[in-house]
Length: 119
Image 1 (spheres, rainbow, N blue to C red):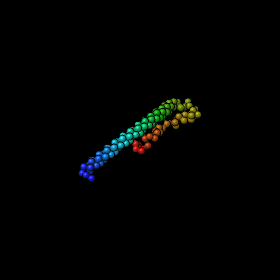
Image 2 (tube, rainbow, N blue to C red):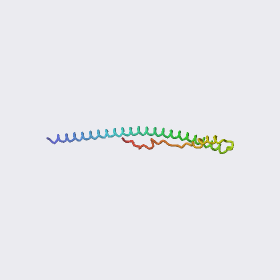
Image 3 (cartoon, rainbow, N blue to C red):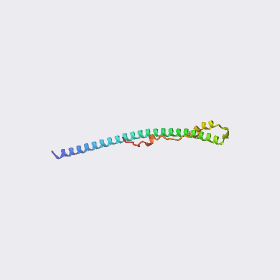
Image 4 (cartoon, helix red, strand yellow):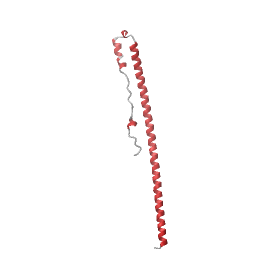
């Protein structure tokens, strides 16, 4: 082999290496872009589910609050009334109202799931 051909082969080999490295870097960039896009889609779905869960909990809390407010008003009216005018059966029938207080039980399905954006 002459000196001239060795230089050409060396330049050709360096060029091939540079092209392969550029190809790998482009493939890695595309892969990173795709992973980030998938992560954003999962994040968006998680936020939608979380918002729905909070809305459901808020609706239930408002409902329970209304039940408790009604029970407290009934109890207040009972305490202000003349109990001597009530029969024992009427007092017994009010027992259900006195024990009907609602307690809020939050749904935490989305909140308790592990927050993983990676597969």
